[in-house]
Amino acid sequence: MRQRKIFKQDCYAFLCFGNNLNKHSRAVKSEMDNVIDKEKLLLIYNPIAGQELINRMLSDIVISLQERWDVTIRPTLRQEHAEQIAYEESGGYNVVVAAGGDGTIHEVVNGLMRLDRRPVLGILPAGTANDIARTLQIPLDLLEACEFMKQELPQAIDIGRCGTRYFVNFLGVGLISTVSSEIKNETKTYLKHFTYYLKSLQYLQEDHLFRTMIKTETETIEKEAVMVYVAKGMSLAGIELFTENKMNSGYLEVIVVENIGLSEIVSVMSSYLRREPFQHKAISRHKASSLTLECNPAQIIDTDGEENGKTPVDIKLLVGALHVIGRI
Image 1 (cartoon, rainbow, N blue to C red):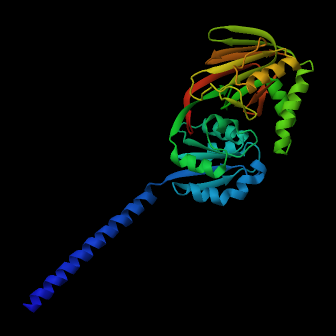
Image 2 (cartoon, helix red, strand yellow):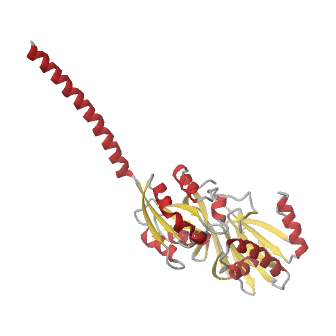
Image 3 (cartoon, rainbow, N blue to C red):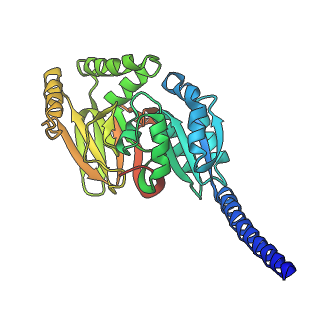
C-alpha cells in the first residue's frame, strides 16, 4: 500500500511538472513567435538635423523603436544620400523612417516612389519648419514621435509628381523658391524663421513679377504674379496657413499671388492671426488634380524646400500613392 501511495504521489508530481513545463514552453514559443514575426524597420537619419539632435538621441530612439520593430540604422553622409538609401536598400523592410527635416523626408519619398513595392513611411521630425509632420499631426518631440509611430496605423496619402520628381507638401515658384534658396545655408534655427519673413518682405518690395500661364483640367489661368504655390499640406515655414488641406484630399490647391505690397501683406497676416479665411483680392485659389505651369521668364521650381529645375513643368497628383504613419 505504501509503495502504491508513493507511486501515486510521483505520478501527480510528474503531471504537475509536465503542466508547468508546457506552460513555460508555450510562453517561450509565444516570445519566440514575437521575435520571428517582428517587422523590419529601416531608419534613415540625417545626423546634423536639428543641430545634431538626432545624433544625441539616437540610442533612445532606437531603443524605443525596437519595442515593435527589428531596427536597422543608416545615417546620411551627403545631399541626396537619403534618396539613394531609400531606393537601393528598402527592399525587405516593412517600414522606412525618415528622421530629419522636410528635406530629408523629401529625399526619402523620392527614393520610395521609384520602387514598385513601397514600404510604409514613418517620420521623426528634427528640422526647422517640420511642415510635413505638422500636417500629419506627428509630435515634434522625437521620443513622442516614436510612441506615435508605434500606436498609429498607416494611412494612404496623395503624392505630387513634378516631371520625374515627387513632392509631399508643396511646389512653388517665384517668391517662395527665391527666399528658400537665399536662406538655405542659414545655420541658426531661430534666425531661419526671422530671415524667411524678412526676405519675403524684401522680395515683395522689389520688381519680381513674371507672367504665368496655368492649364488645369477645367480652366486656363493667365496672370502677372510674384508667386505660384501648389499646396498639398497645411503648413508653410512652420505656419499653418491652409488648415483645411488634407494629405488625402484627392486634389492640389493652386494659389496664385499677384503683385502685392507690404501693406497688403500685413493685412493678409492680420487675417491669419485672427483665424479668418486666407483671402485677398490679389490672391486667387484653384483646385486641380493635374496642371501645366509655364512662366515668363522661366522660374526656379521649389519642391518641399528643395530646388528642382525650372519651369515649364507638368504636375500631377498621384492619389493614395504612399502609406505613411500619421493622422489625416
